[in-house]
Length: 270
Image (cartoon, rainbow, N blue to C red; front, side):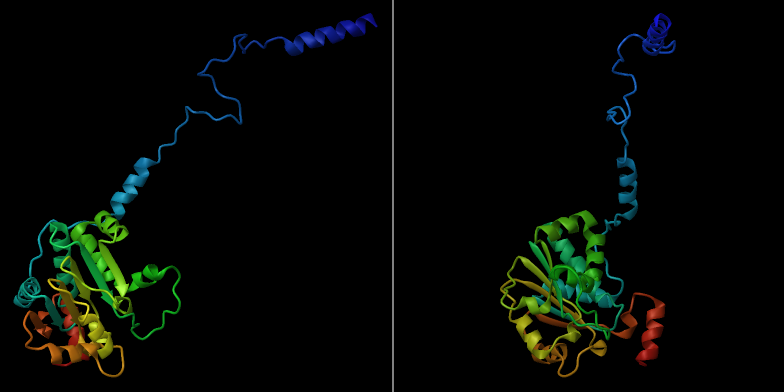
């Protein structure tokens, strides 16, 4: 019995005696934490990686002013600056949309206007897109991506995002223009106007207020609708009106690429 009690006491001493590699002092603040405890000394820095990705994906902003690439573009640019309503007609690749959007960006940046309105008829080029997910602005985004690319180039992606959030840049289907009035603080661009009906074009034109800047672009030969064409009808009805200019781009005015010229030449022999 005595031997058994002595053995138990020796076992307890061995179990509770400090090991040779451990200290009798309480652990300091710099000592490792136990497993399961948060270690505030360990910081994972992710900002540099995010910053790198942001820089790689950011849109390069053009610091140069808009320059015409040919006499036709120069005439078109001057017409937009001098007239309340300008209609640009001609084949793809002539810079109709680019010049209009770039001038709108310059006007917004200089404070000449307070808002850019981008619109077009929601007509698919042959295929049916169905019910796209998201709100109306998200559904319409696919129709207006080309303009956003131009604005990103002229203003910078961050500025464009800010202006969209605060209503300084608005993109909406043509049908949503009914009941609106474009005042002197607005710069309005109607693109792909060859896909408007006569009623839609009349509705849009009667939105124009005093001092407003409006640009209508389209290529009559690429219409995706049947029946009377609103752009053709507008050209016939508006010709000769004061403060309205109708500009015609020709095949030789294409600046996108030589290949585009060749392609259009095959589809539309001159």
